[in-house]
Image (tube, rainbow, N blue to C red):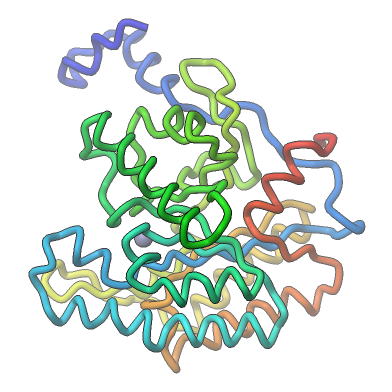
Length: 301
Ligand SMILES: [Zn+2]
């Protein structure tokens, strides 16, 4: 691969360079298994991105009010989420920036104690696509080390902050012994990520904005972003995704944030979604790691 295209403007690329730019990081073979554990009809994987203050820290910690919004996630949002999961006896995956895991070390350890999985969510919610190769490598490596120190086990999964990957991220995660990433959007089912047309060995548990609370409920005072969907409608959208996964025998994966879902007018969405999933009676609630381990070894459909 010449990578000449990276030094040109997009309108200067030849057709082969366009192909090369797309093939560089791409969904490879589908990892949709023939069956789920205990004969379940579909897999249900909840994930929570525990950003807390890291969104504002990444931007230079200029706004005290936005820092307090992040603190709400820790003080109120996360306890509400944990309470719902505890009542429902559901284990989930929490992706945490390393500095947040350290700042709230007791919370991180409590999540581990409660049976949840901890995955890496960057160092300080930095955007990987902005970083030089060596800096990204250093932050991922230090982040994995810090989470291991706090949790007692090395993280096996990562979700890149703001779902932004660089062209190096897949190779770096694989070299650091991560088993899966959960930042890409090329399928409804898990897949193996190909790098330059070859299987990378890294699994993808795909996300999508349609299954992300932030896409409907986020607020940015100066950026003009406002919540535009009612909580009832958000639940309906999530429920249809769940119903579809059940009918197809596939995967229902979802992303939520303690500082977004953890309000009195919203936390019931999580509660009701779990209730609806349980009402189907034969679904497999799993952490992302359990999911990655299952699809890696099961016969494929
Ligand atoms: Zn995040």
